[in-house]
Image (cartoon, rainbow, N blue to C red; front, top):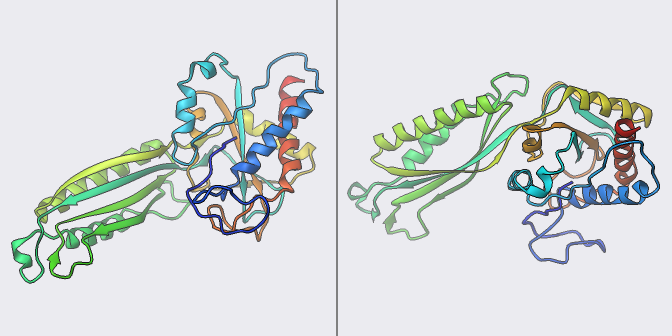
Length: 310
């Protein structure tokens, strides 16, 4: 489970609201932690013929750095786990529904910042400067053409502008610098690399034609979460035994999940847990993890453990 929150102001007024300003658990990681912590009391009462269970509370999921750091930690590598399982609550899906995919569960995600450098000038004499405005507008159009937004498209690609910066509220000055911030999403790492190559080529061409220089920063990378078929079968079997409806999606989920780092090295299984059709979306200011999911989440994990260890 993940244990980080989001840099958002808590707007809800319930007793368990965040005590830290500018920080809120609007992705349900607090609920995921409660599910995994709850297994402690159940595990104390169990006797297994074999094996070991490790409860992993992982930091820094939201920026994609936590799982990668865990994989490099000697304390984790010495464990050499046979399987790694995780869940994520999913608003918009019926409460307690188990959501699976055939193979890829979540998308490959990459964030980038493009900084454009030109030359500032007097607003009455823009010809004496190099304004990035037209280049920014052109890049937005170009990136829009690179999109294949249909989830069923094998070349699925989503390029989302998240922030645009240019100039200041000084009406006598023509801007001389700007920046574009995007997230890119594809179903596979290979598709992501092809998309990144195209993005770089277009940025280079556009900046050259507009006499701009640029720097490009890639960050917050999330590899695709690819489920092991055997893990998927275990999840489905346990869900059926628990009397929970199991929905198999035709396409992966479009959000990033750094659990994908574990799937690059271990047999992994990640599944969704429906959080209610009318529950606010993840990362929405009014989202609150439904406590009803604690029992079904713990039931799924305890069932997976019993299935593996006997």
